Amino acid sequence: MNTRLDELTSWHAAWRGLKVAVLGLSVTGFSVADTLTELGADVYVFSEGASSEHRTLIPVIGARLLIGPLEQAPEELVAFSPDVVVASPGFSPQHPVIRWVREESDAALWGDIELAWRVRDKVVRNDGSAADWVFITGTNGKTTTTQLTATMMVEGGLRAAPCGNIGVPVLDAVRDPAGFDALVIEVSSHQLWYLQQSTSAEAITPYASVCLNLADDHLVWHGSRDAYRDAKAIVYRGTRVACVYNKSDAATMAMVEEADVVEGARAIGFGLGVPGPSDLGIVDDIVVDRAFLDDRRTSALELTTVTALHEAGLAAPHMVSNILAAAALARSLHVAPAAIAKAVASFRLDSHRIEIVATHEGVVWVDDSKATNPHAARSSLQAFPDAIWVVGGDLKGIDLDPLIADIGGRVRATVVIGTERSTITAAFRRHAPQVPLYEVEPGHTEEVMVRVVELAAEIARAGDTVLLAPAAASFDQFTSYEDRGRRFAEAVQDWISGESSRGTDTHEA
Image (tube, rainbow, N blue to C red):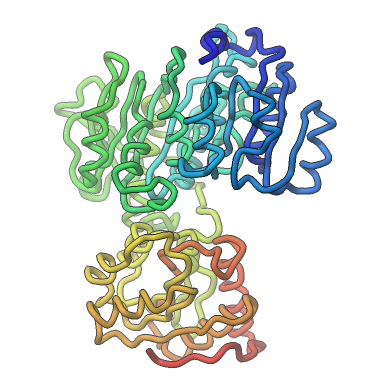
């Protein structure tokens, strides 16, 4: 291992000439290459594909680029003999190039989060310190909670930015010349796995951190349920002030109990019930903080009310949990209760997250295409009982049997889409045979949601909710969960306007 790396703990360190291979050239990969070339490193990017913009920019910024298959370590990578390999989060532990780095090369293996931490002092505050980091992970709710937390902080007068897995690379935020008081960083299990590999003497010490929940997801990428859990647990490592956990999810509590944190860091629980000291929760209609006040054993601070959350369209149980987690993180940075209340009142969910796309003749059509795993779908189904459930897609190796056994019998009907329909229909026959079950046969992508809506419209009656909560990834038939949700919403609007055309054949399963 190159001992020089232990000295690279500042933007102003001696990065010039460091040989770095960058794997992947999506948004994250480009931010890595752009940062390292600015620092003067010798950068070589390896990717199976890239946008025309990124292909053009890589030589402009002074890096080399090889586009081609990565079924094994390319000869050019081996000959380059990098000091460090920085991998984009899509590269799994089993990827042949990652295995080459870990087993055959002498290079250190980093992700973009470790690189960003090392150069976080490019822009500093008036006192010379870098922005505080807040880490947010979990199987579901990460993006919403990241946005909520940043919104609360900004309302409270802090310069804060949401970044990371949310879409804005953390390296772009670190290099923003405006500078920040806090970076609210959504970290995926993939990014956390790369942090788990670090042997650096420069430990990452977030100000506060949370794992919102834990359920099976990305098991193929990680290789096992335990490996996925262990990666998520890294979020708490080194936390300095507040380890926020979900009181209704024992796994997150265990992560905090086992975490190696900075002495003095507090465990802060959140839940939908009455909070104990050092918790946030709900008393009657009031959302309260019993963690961040001096007299927390006998007093509480009002943050908002459940009534206000209803008025803002944020009262679904999983959304209230997200709000409590975000409030705990914001309160750890001394954001006032009034600012939290104001932020929640103005907050609106992103598209494709329990989004009502239409109400017509008493039927509510809801797009929760972001529900890409069973845990997220469960939250949606609990928020909309007796729904007509649109489910299916790329299951990513996840078993839907527990979800269908537990909650599948409560839906009024099910419309199954995707290439793994037989797995889902078989689970319904085992666990909820009384539920009317319909399949949309594979066809052109343009036709799938048209036929889904036609079928659901035939089934639905006044008072029903048609809920797209697929519990699966979208890539078997769509380009993304956004594409899937957009096509659903468009098909609903077309059907309402009477312009929908018939799509693929279906049959009751």
